[in-house]
Length: 289
Image 1 (spheres, helix red, strand yellow):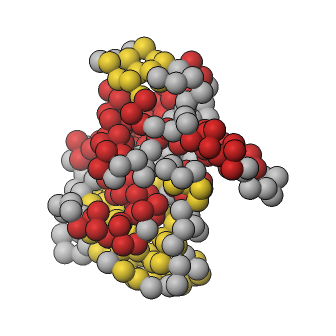
Image 2: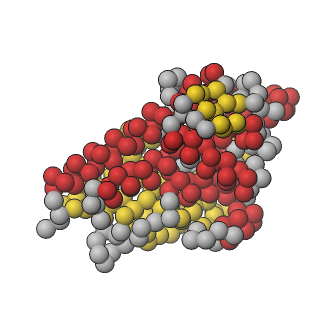
Image 3: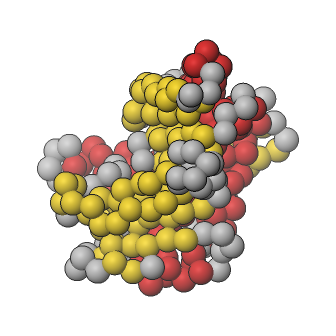
């Protein structure tokens, strides 16, 4: 007999669902609790809205001494993707996000002059990492890890479950998903991909086994994933992008990259990577992969 243990908790600006299929109810419950402890630990380190988090202190002071291995790894991983796509993904986009959020809340579009001013603060190469210390080269810079932290937290939760001898599990952080095995030895996990123009309609269903999947799109994400950091304006041409990879952090970042790059360049990017699959829904409703 197997037990299905499922719990939902708020973290990382969304709802996180952890589902475990386990022959021992007590062990399954303990594994889920341990996985959520890891999710909340990552949340507390990287929450841009929490003044005492490592990211909060870094943004406020312009430097952080003694940064955790987790935060340093996530920043370095994000910057490696920035190098790969020449800055079309950039965690230093925070000043632009704040500008857009402030103006949109007043039903306005930011003036070109203010966009140009904020663009001067956006460049991942101005993050200086020296051992355990991180600093900004320009005053007024700030980072957001919204496009990477969820995927990383999912990966850490999966690692925790695996150490707890869990063989079948699914972790879902607001659409950033990674699974262990299948639902059982013979049935994979099935993930529905919704139509960005009609959330009640399913575009397709994807079968996963020891993989991760993430979707970035106009119906799911905030400005964190929509602003093109090279031009300072929302990306256009793609309604949603979905990426399947081995790790959730990679699927998370690549889905955002594809959304910003557009269908043609996004598909070309994925074509250069091993063990990665993707498809996009364009503004005219076409599905490309």
